[in-house]
Structure formats: structure tokens, C-alpha cells
Length: 105
Image 1 (cartoon, rainbow, N blue to C red):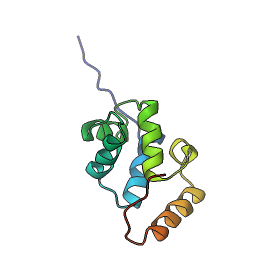
Image 2 (image 1 turned 90 degrees about the horizontal axis):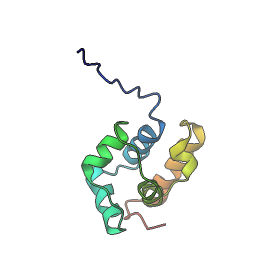
Image 3 (image 1 turned 90 degrees about the vertical axis):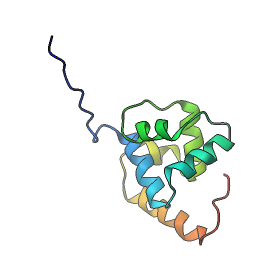
């Protein structure tokens, strides 16, 4: 019996790709985001985040909500195709931070 390799198309993985792009744009490491989420009682590990960002695991609603809150973005920013509006919002978040610890939203 021939085994078929499952190929994940990153063009389809909009949610994971957006989470990764926003997180990196805000200069937040995976371990840092996971620690913040766990402090907010979101059931997630770094391994889970890696799989979500890579499109290998579905995201739970509680995880999506927590990530949205911790990154300080809108659901649309995570769910839609990235565009100019998202870039502007992330830029504003970066400039308003000025090196301070991100406040819980």
C-alpha cells in the first residue's frame, strides 16, 4: 500500500501565517506568547503554537481569543488575508509600545 505525503499549502494557512507574521512583527517570541497565554488560563503549549502557525493543527476558539487579546489585534487581522490595514495597525502597536511590556487588552 502506497503512503501519500500530506502537503500543507501555506497559502491556505491564513490564520497560522497571520499569527506568525503579527507575532514576529511585534518581536514576541513563541515562548513569550505561550507564557502570557498560559497566565490567562489558555490551554496551549509552544509545540501547539508551532503547529498552529505551520498549519498542522486547528486552533481552538479559546486559543484564538487569547492570541487576539495578547497580540492586541482584531479577529479580522488574524482571519483575513494580510493587507495594508494590518501592517498599519501592527506598526501603530509597535510605536505605542516604546519598549514597554504589552498591556493586557
